[in-house]
Length: 387
Image 1 (cartoon, one colour):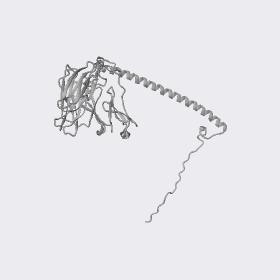
Image 2 (cartoon, rainbow, N blue to C red):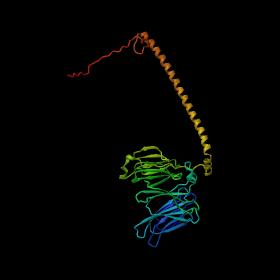
Image 3 (cartoon, rainbow, N blue to C red):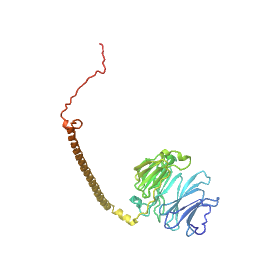
Image 4 (cartoon, rainbow, N blue to C red):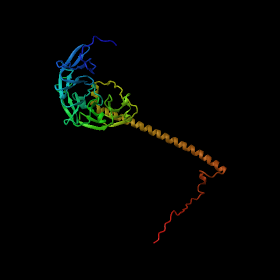
């Protein structure tokens, strides 16, 4: 490992994040205000070319969180918590940068409600097998958990970015009111989102299909503190684990374990575990099919389904034939064993006769005994009543 070139100047840098795109090396960082005349900055940088691709100045900034859209890094969202000049009120700006467009245009979405969580919807390079037709054709989206209109409940809003390239607006397309959620976990295939209420909400879960706009299921995993989708988007795991060290590590250990759910919200498995510290999925390899091949499979899905049904029926018949053959073999073996045991019995019976033994299971002695039944009555108690 060696240093490539001279360090890049980034005065006051607080945090940075790399774009997930594999096409080029791009990172973003933010720096706070130095004084009343020097604004905070959000900067998108190409470290290889050592050039600043885009920057934006911001005033009255409390903090900034950087969010790249998964897989291709088409969008960067700077979640900016801002305050008024007096510092008595605060609000959130979402500065959305369209990285694929020329000059990287920027749009601002303002929310006056307190924001709990933000998450982009994943859009894989090649649609995953579990991706719905709606998610494959939908525009890029993100979700925000924020305070409700009454200031007490929590709402979840979904926003559309119009298009990955050449989009012109950010608009709210759906708002779910009064949801017990403080985290958003999109399926890696897109389309389905798990709204999770962790920590003080004690593991409230809701599986929601954003394309069909329908709640698939609600559930609960008490004390859940982690959610992990498998890379294919078929199942998701909710986890209650404990830290390895500290006083908190010995608390609530009776709740340790995990639950496995289908993406529709059906519970598939529940596994309690003592001394449970971490859960991780094995990384999923890239799809072997190209996007065109995946689309071809989708078009011919009914044809493939009929072929698989025929193969499954043939496999079931083979398994049934094998089971029938095994059953017949066991019956033949049993009858052979019974014949051998009967031959031994008859041989021993003749020997007992020769020795004059006529008790036990000697069938020849049957018929020499008469079975009688005798009834015996006993007085258990006697009570005399005088008139």
